[in-house]
Image (cartoon, rainbow, N blue to C red; front, top):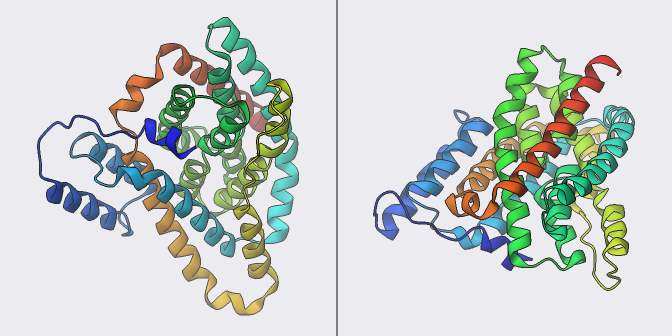
Length: 325
């Protein structure tokens, strides 16, 4: 799978020539800047996009592994700022939304793929990435359907592009519609692709939105397992292993410690602060991996499929939350 990820993370021609040392200095300086309180999640992503396409990412071959590890550690750290009882309440409320949105998105994605005449495996990966949890879902499903590098790259490219837009768009729409923190947290957990942008958008909106969004999103991520099993049946592949997101268990443990172990109160705020910094850096690294190679590799039809699916799940969920919840 790592090879598949690296296909879309190849180095691209830069706008100006600089030495390798200068490239590293610029990158590290911006990385350190993202660790300060001055930089918000959207700004970190934007800085990553700028460095990717202007001066370049000097450590591109390490980017995918670094973002995965840092995201998981950051999410576990955020668990120390959450309460089990509140999380269970949010999880129950988001369950019906989750089930309905996942299966309706997968069904619609199948029809759109056929209508647009997109290769079946590429279409299924885009649908799974939109329905569950973005790049993580694609990484789990790709080995199950035995997709090749190009198919996986296109799907990841679509998700990365739309996921980056969501980080800026959702908080703006939420403020414009005057959504409550509860409404916004539920909405972005279901309608934004990757966990990183869900947490980034929700943390910008408020602490209650962050708790609801993180809990619902991680519960949603567990649907990778049944969807992967269903995929194996559809694609008639019985031999592939399925990647289980084990870090979610550590997130639950962190919440339990914060709720029931009184001694945790002294260190919990510091762990949450470090986790938020880690998330900001994660989004910088995600942006730094989103270069022109990705944009060129995607193609119009797959991007259109991803955009239609995203519009369906985002608008449908928003209307349901506002008028029927």
